[in-house]
Length: 243
Image 1 (cartoon, helix red, strand yellow):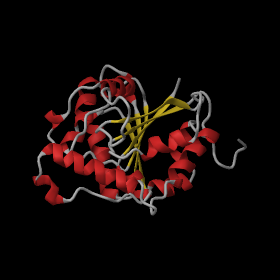
Image 2 (cartoon, one colour):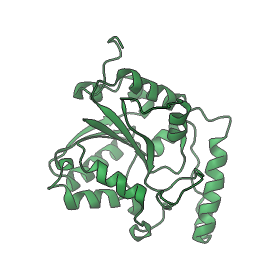
Image 3 (spheres, helix red, strand yellow):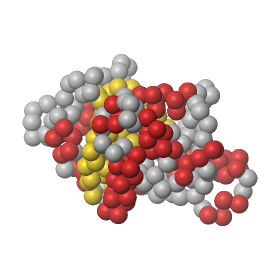
Image 4 (spheres, helix red, strand yellow):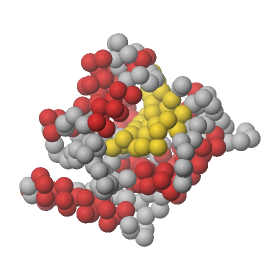
């Protein structure tokens, strides 16, 4: 079945008011202490009364109402917070709906979410880590194995600036000529035109036959516009059409 794979970076969290970043003086602490401090800080930020996740809630409801069968959606993030996962859980879905490929958000850089069993989740990766800090996990392997067979992607608020995040492009480059992702379409959404241009270039370098559709906009504004690039692809219906 056709699927839209969504990659969310800090742009999604910032749009909800979670603008916290790691203080530079924390870089001097041992790695384990940095992770403990970050986990505590991000967890606290997620409980802040100033946080407003209505854009995520509205976005998920939009997909539920406007996704055209048999299209489905799957989500990935490099964020440590689990705002998106929490909003999905708040939908109260007892069964997987037709518009979702999975009710799991793949956290490529780890997460502050505490589950009864976190052993299969991606290990916590710091922004200052080098690529060799990333280790194979069940979650990471499953995410990669799925995305390389897909051809429609949306990247929101991600820059791939950190060395540890560029692993994905390098891994895709090694296999793009043999799998469907080599002929993929990428919608790149970012309010910074230079960031859009840079990521578009990185994608074209890694996947020469890919098509990149740049969208210079915040995620909120693009969503309010009705996700026109997805409408054009046939994945979602125009908001003016009946549900």
